[in-house]
Length: 326
Ligand SMILES: Nc1ncnc2c1ncn2[C@@H]1O[C@H](COP(=O)(O)OP(=O)(O)OP(=O)(O)O)[C@@H](O)[C@H]1O
Ligand SMILES: [Mg+2]
Image 1 (cartoon, rainbow, N blue to C red):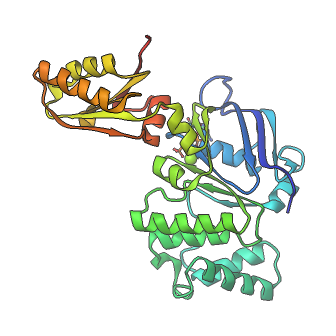
Image 2: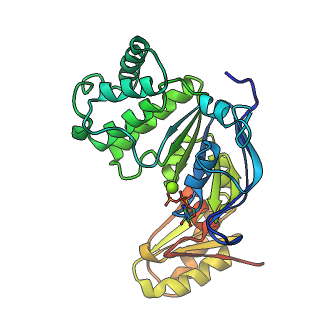
């Protein structure tokens, strides 16, 4: 095991696909991932998550910048980096014809373990990921959650210091997602540093000790989930409207009451603002709504969600966010 304080450090990493110096890719990415944590790289489609994973796992070369993984230079010591890492890709790499056991044994052999050792490791991992009952079934018959767990197991054949997991639960149902979460938490407990990418706020909130929000190939916000939520303001007053046509007036009222920003979710007829004076703001809003003849369906005080942080900073679809400059 490396004794570095940071399992992963990336400095101003740039990568541009094709010939342009602008556009998709990475535009100067900096990351510090402390050893032993679960680190969430959160971003919408095309933000550059898979590109980061490919560069840090030496599958792709960066154009500029530098990075170390487990203490080794990604550009100059690729083979040493590869000897310390595991990668569970966005698309599972297991063979459907083989059984779970055979897949793991094969990965062990590919990783140059002796047959006996590969076999023992396969058994251990099947137990760890709760797959012993399914061990002799062809993977083609596994459920999505079982496949992801097998994929995770395969990436752990040689007990890596750092594990990269690209979108571990995309397309899984809630139960399968929780199984995978449990598996990832157990890896952290065993001392593995995990960098996971996800588009799901809830996933990052549940799993990650630290989060970087990625947009257009850059880190736009980082911190603990709690820190990110509180950086967005404290409690929020949220109003759900009965009628969409009330949205403009409701937004005006809340803008007058709220702190730094208003988030309008048109698809859900919902508007929220950060408030410092909880009950006072609630009362003010209720009386302003009554004065304007607006009848909200619901009006509550609550903590901000990571969704709001994400939507606010990435400016995602269907939702507008507006800075108030007061
Ligand atoms: N081989 C490639 N050639 C050209 N452009 C690419 C290539 N791979 C990725 N891109 C572009 O680079 C950007 C970042 O892609 P990347 O796959 O890293 O995003 P992502 O955050 O993993 O997205 P997703 O959530 O969809 O997996 C995107 O705009 C993508 O279209
Ligand atoms: Mg991706």
